[in-house]
Length: 71
Image (tube, rainbow, N blue to C red; front, side):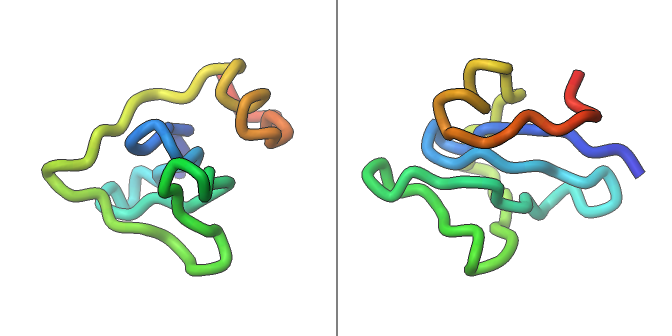
């Protein structure tokens, strides 16, 4: 099971499990920018969703501890 860390629409940091590519688990979402709350569970990735790979700076910006498997 491989996990890819991503930023959705520049407002939510999360991860996508390769077994469920249409769902993103939320690590943190900026409410000021319209981000998703992790308490509401995973979010769907649709065709109009902008997703990019997360960077070290994203973990700092969203104030999330970088996971040990982040590369």
